[in-house]
Image 1 (cartoon, rainbow, N blue to C red):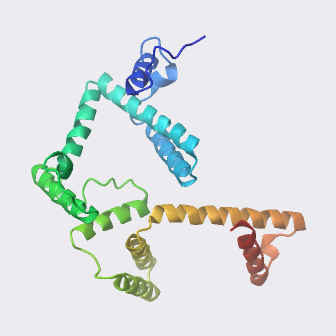
Image 2 (cartoon, helix red, strand yellow):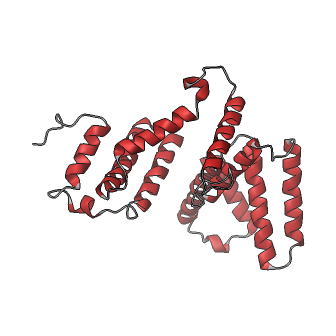
Image 3 (tube, one colour):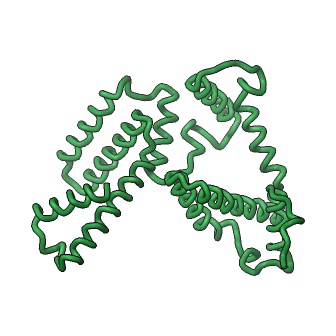
Length: 263
């Protein structure tokens, strides 16, 4: 019978277990993993954590946080095995960044509003940018592999903090209308793709102005569609009907019933 007593319930305990799993007598699967082979599973775990948070599922959050820590531990272990960095180096980088970017707490304590803190954060990043030869813009550092909606909202937020933004939300709405008008006037497929992209980007901007996360609300909209459509499918099966044979009015009536039933 295995005992957990000798492994402390903290990162050191996790790391000790990972060292055994990837050691000479360890688990073949764990030993076979590489930095790149873990990417897909890591992203899946991130989305599972997001789902648990949105569902307010406490035990699910605990479990998914643990899975993410597992991946972080594996990545650190692989880095150490290859002699690229140490776990102490990872924690040092993070702690130094937190201290550096919170001078109002750790350097010269003062009371700042959230907006003042964001402005201070941008000033610090500007100074870091000057010293970083590989960066040219404050928009750098955001991974382009992020989900498109999240990336759009993130770069819009950064640009806004630098003063590049509409004066009010009316301007944002007018911009959406203008982009739709341009889409209607577009002729080629390339132009239509361009204008449709601008419409989506403008809608994300409106979401940001409303202080709503675009990625989250689209996931919720997709979930609502899923619930409603499966209700429609179930209703049709029970009635022995084919969706393709219904006219538009019948489909709309069925969809309204699904909205009433499933929310």
